[in-house]
Length: 212
Length: 212
Image 1 (cartoon, each protein chain N blue to C red):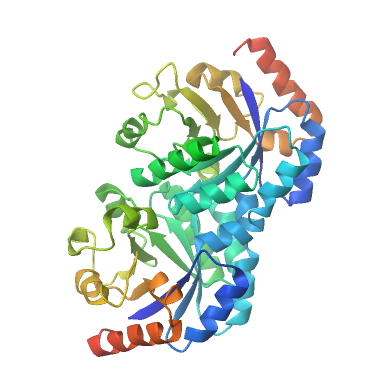
Image 2: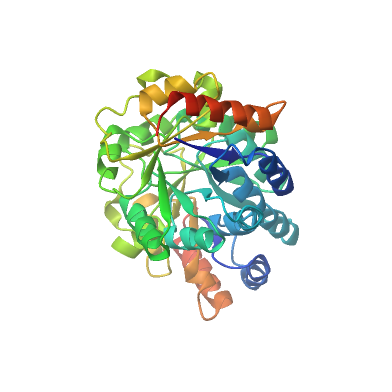
């Protein structure tokens, strides 16, 4: 199970400085939506330049204009780019097409998708599916609960990512519920008093769980 | 009926230069999603600075992290900020709350919302509702058709905006179908050989239709 470090609500320099402190423990680096919307595509460029050997996820949350946004992210150095599962399917088709042309990956964010939409998304077999409790939902409802179920959706070949307020305390619950290949961790690392230590603890916890 | 000029897929300087050519004919200026995602919040700041007397719409397409994104846009000078209707309702609640605090407006983009979602959104009486055929949908299906119906949704007090490939040729059809208070025009002006002339023709067409 990989750790994707989500960088949000900070300046680009801060994001780079923080990532340096934890890079030994994390696998993928996510340029958060807030960085892209606040600073633009240079947030992706600068973070990829600082960490050329780490896969970088551009959390651009595309919902339209897919070719323009996906090409922009991939050209800026992103290895994975996100699209909202609530988008029209034609948008999803374009994302998959651009990813194939660039030999890069798509992450489909399942935030607020209906059961019907989830089933329609199953055909995108090359995508990573991100089960996502949004920041706004967390503030109202708290983080993950085990009832989030993917029961009608999940197939064993599917690559799942989990996001939404995941911490050391909730890591085992989330892993047991969703069997993710990737856990996306933001403030549990970035807002920790000692980010290096927090990231290392999460890494050690994953190693002890012996999940692939 | 107001004209909202949508500025997309260009540099900030180009957007300002183009707007100068048409500002006599347009009412609102939209900083398009592509400008925000490519150049960040400074796209909103620079365009508002260049046109301090025009209402500026930040098409940030919020779907999470509503307070952060809406405050960022309003502080940058936006008068109206957009949120996706497919977002969790808690996100919508936060958008309305922030707008109220700043005494500014919210535009809810109805792109790909289900009938059920549209009905749930009716309670946001202070919002502008944007009926939106996305760029990706236009490439597949063409622009507006009169069957887009808002029949279960529309109430006479509702403020409607219409977006999606609207041109001089389709203006009357869209107006008859949706009775919008605002028509959002992008490439029919920005990609015209003579943008000044194109914007003026659309303005004259609206004046002749004698819609409020």
